[in-house]
Structures are given as C-alpha cells and as structure tokens.
Length: 290
Image 1 (cartoon, rainbow, N blue to C red):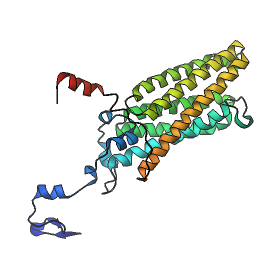
Image 2 (cartoon, rainbow, N blue to C red; image 1 turned 30 degrees about the horizontal axis):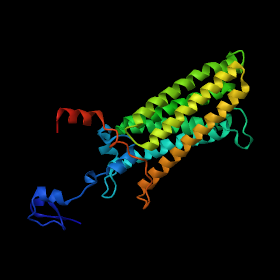
Image 3 (cartoon, helix red, strand yellow; image 1 turned 60 degrees about the vertical axis):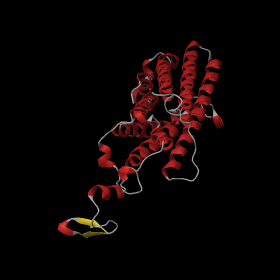
Image 4 (cartoon, rainbow, N blue to C red; image 1 turned 120 degrees about the horizontal axis):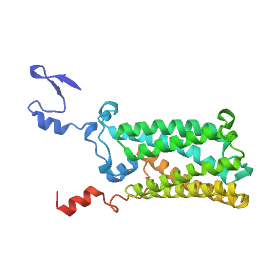
C-alpha cells in the first residue's frame, strides 16, 4: 500500500525510509524485468532470440502486471490465432484431398468460407501484429499464407468472378494455376531453410507443406496431360503430406497453449538455435569479438 512519505514523496511499506533510490528499484520487480528462458522464448516466437525485433509499441500494448511478461502478452495471441486460422483451413482441405468419407473432387469448395475468414482474414491480421511486435519470420509466414488462402478462395468462387470460364476447359485452367502451387512450394522450401534456426517442429511443418505443393502441382499438370489416374494419386499424396503438416501444426499449437497457461507438462518443439548457430555468433567467434 502506498503512503505519503517525507518531503511529499511516495513510499511503500515494504521499503525502509532510508533506502536509496537505486537499492529501492532493485527490490521492486516489475513486468519489464521478467526474463524468458531460451526454451520458452523459442516456443513463443518461433524464431531465434537474436532475430527478435525491438518494436517500441510493446511498451504501449503490453499488460504491465507483476505476473505477465509484456512480450508474452503480445506474441502468444497472434501466434496461436495465426496457427488456428492455418489449421482450420488446411486440415479439412487435406481430408477432402484424400477423399475421406466420400469427399468429392471439388478441391475443398465447401470450405471456401474458412479460406476467406480463418485463412485470409485471421492469418493476415495476425501477421500484421507479428510485424508490429518485430517478429519478422512469423509475420512473413502468416501474411504469405493469408494471401494464398484468399487467392485460393477467390479462384474457387468461380460463380462470382468467372475465372475458370475464361478457359476452354477446366484442364487448361488447372495447367496454369499449377504454377502458383509450384512457387508456393518453393516459398515453403525457403521457409524450411530459415526454420533451421528455430525448431524441429517448424522445419517439419514446412517440409510437409513443400511436399504438399509439389504433389498438387504434379496433379494439376497431369490433369492437363489427360493422366486422370496419376493426377488422382498425386492429389491423394498431396492431401497426405498436408495432413502430416497439420499434425505438426496442431502439436505446435498445443505446445503454445500449454506454455501460455503455465501447464505442468510442456511439449518440446526441438530447439535448433544451439545446433545451427547464427551468422552474428559465428562472426564474433571468428573475429574474437566479445
């Protein structure tokens, strides 16, 4: 409880009146002094510690309570929400691509609403918040996939935009759309390389996503070639790889959720930052800099 001290200054009952300003500050623990272990940091940011940004907006948006770190308040909600948006688009789509329970060959048309709102909307917003927090890698990932889901949803909404109707047949359209899938696979390959500085779970996630896009690219090309049987097999394989990516994604999401509530059991993600040293660390070691 705060009380009026001498000379009009405010003092606290747990501090001696003769305590100087510096020792007093050392005795008071604020939200800004809460530290994160390397393991917890790796879970919250999914990027190397030295790669985290220093956005000043954290000071304004953080919740300055004694038990909550400002960085945790800002980083966890965007990460969790972004993963939810991603998983609630890709998981049902993977089931549809594999033909579970008689799902038809419509490439997930029934889930188009999820592509717009969970995928495009939620992931883009979360990517912006990650960018504000200075977390460049998750921001790029979320906004890239948010844009992809919006692209996919608009393409499927042929009744409104009439995209497919401009082609002589559906196979001709799929032959050109395959290039979008091809380069999304290449983008996932780049993400996978960058993820080598984060954790094993993230690396596996992008590996399976890359394989998903590779298989779907082949399925679309083979549809144009008239090899319907091979195209169907590649589509199922793409759905299977997408499902593997979803399994890893749900694991990451659960790990983040457990960490956010300080659950007694924590799920490992496989920190790679110590195994794959950063450029700055290697440069310091090579030059002998401290």
